[in-house]
View: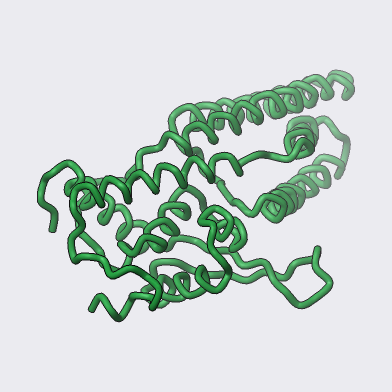
Length: 106
Length: 166
């Protein structure tokens, strides 16, 4: 990353599950839906709802891929943190770090 | 604004968290990263398969006629196929190094591959027995398997230990 990161608190990302989703996605290029679900220990519906919120805010992208390992029409769903999502997450974490260390953010 | 993004079963969060809440949120991110790092486990067959592909690249130049071009074309097709298979098995796609050690190991692998290719090309230009091409090919296979496994270890460790803003 170039330049200094401006800490910006983001209420949409700050919801605990959404923050954790972005944190997991930050460490990889793409994650399968089931990997995210298992890492967070939540059910499909809850993850889907939160992914929809993040996707509508253009913070993540969702891509579906046909699975040769499955006989039915189900697909593998890959999730990526978008460039905007990465910047927003980094700025939010910088703000959280300031708050955690007792320095004001925003 | 906040209620627009809040699920019905989500706890209502204060607009700005306390220092304690911020520390807890950051600790969750660290814990999640450690969980994800455990999942970056390459199947046993991945590095030998990748080694065969890189060995093909390294040794292809000594093949006569269109053999070299065919071998390289097969390698070019095989790499994305192998990566796709790996991604589907693990559910995780990580294509970039996560820190300085994994970056160094990847750089070393690439340098060795180029050196092996140059070596094979020199064998061809000097007209030595094509069987000598097996030497850089074998060296590339061994280096890919050994360094590839070290790369995975480094990637796991650096993913686990990475600062949230790294």
